[in-house]
Amino acid sequence: MSDYEVLREQMVEYQLARRGIREPVLSAMAEVPREEFVDEHLRGAAYDDGALPIEAGQTISQPFIVALMVQELGVGPDATVLEIGAGSGYAAAVLSRLVATVHAVERHAVLVEAARERLARLGYDNAHVHHGDGSLGWPDAAPYDGILVSAATRDLPPALIEQLRPGAALVVPVGGAIMGQELKRLVRREDRSLSETDLCAVQFVPLREGIE
Image 1 (tube, rainbow, N blue to C red):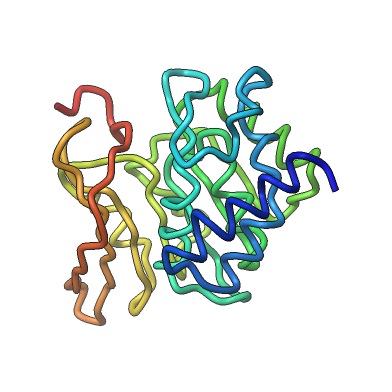
Image 2: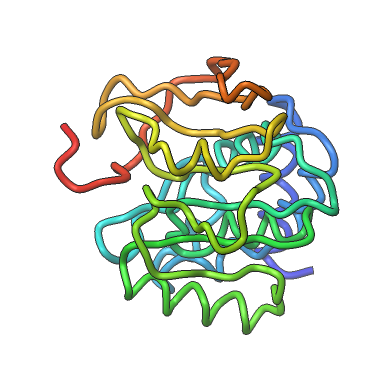
């Protein structure tokens, strides 16, 4: 067993299972090599209990937050899921172990190319990364059985609500650029209204430039 595999097992046990993350998310997190989704000089910190910087001034989220967001989607193996803010591709890789198809949208071209390369090299063929404005979603594959937003927004983009299947969940950080963000789980009702659950305080980079 490699050092990274040992660190991954420890992450799953101490950072995730003891904080309430359950199967099948634990197995997905145990399978995906997080060290492949960070810069080489940061690989030794890949399984630390915190976020790490990546290219374009973005971040790869804390493992627990990734696991919590995926778990709160509540999706099954036949689901088609949308991720907004693909970043390094790590959350898309985790989702790809749990659902049929993942579409991930990223606005930074350098991150799109890097994420595509990683996902292809690691064999996550059901995860597709698209270059675009995440606030517009990805209508080509809508409606979705769940939408995960890996960036903060003050106002929910209407396109994401429209692309969400009735009864499905949208997990999104809501708030300003840095402070006062709350991770929320929103479920679309048949009448297009939303039920809302607050999950925890978080700190994400903004979905759009210029959010204060």
